[in-house]
Image 1: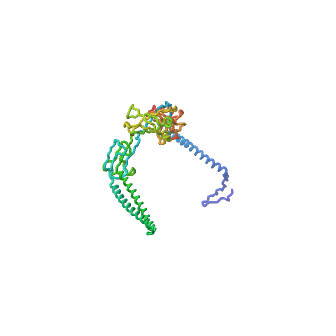
Image 2: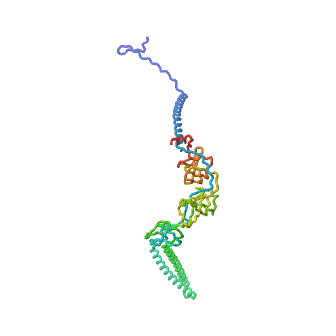
Image 3: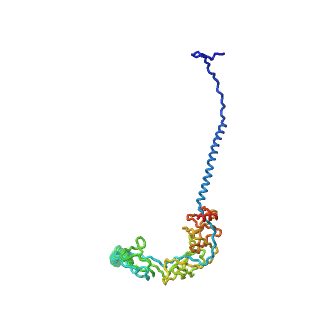
Length: 412
């Protein structure tokens, strides 16, 4: 037994040192295998992310679709009901005075007296009121005095100019002095003309102290009283003194649907009725039209004159104007609730492929509950009943099915 590697420790024991063995060798990791492992990890992470994101995206899309469906207003769409052809069209007409004029003061001052009150019938040039304007009176007196001064100066300059014209012929005076007096005469003559114009202006202002009726009529308003301070003019602080209306003939204005514009002729006799006179028919004459269709309302403005010398009719009332018109076969009847009133004109909402459209229409007969649509609809249109006020062109709507309509009506 070999004792080369053995020795004794201080206690006398034999100590054998541990044997030294070499560690096992490890093979190096290949680069391709490392990239494959990293790719597998990344792919796993992507798959996990996709699996988590796709359901959320589908849920969000479903929520958005559900929100849009709930946001779309639910409407009931029906086919328009054909109406009977119209042979007589009854339209509301506004009755106005033939001439209606506010009367203003042309000069400032204090009202000293008024002579007519409301309801009084006056003739043209009748004195309505008087105004005291002491400032105008004093200005006129001053202007007349200045005119007299200018006239005297001009007369003296004219005499001097004539004298010098005679003297210059005999070389008694110089031509320069003669020209000076001639120019002075022309200048003073111009001053006279200016002063005369000023006097005439003040005289006209003074004449406005008396307020006269510009035409035959009825006083319908008196807005001043004795002692009030009156300002001149219609603008600014100017106050209307009276309002005068000529009511011997009344004007009736109405808007005729453009589809019937060819049915009316100037000079035709038109029948009218008034609530104030039940059972009585008043006849007027169609005197003029606007000769143009209003692009906003698609109507023709018509004026009818009515003889009112008996004074039975009052300006400002409402007339029912009866027109005999050629029948139109494509008229439809809708409830009044289907109409939409917008700034651009009257509209009716239709729906096609769940998209709302606002059609401009022209109405005919209107009994307050139903209205006849003359233009703007066809038999294939689906009309929205009671459309929401916020409905706009091109808006997506949900058209209720018959079952949904029954369920909604039953729920109510």
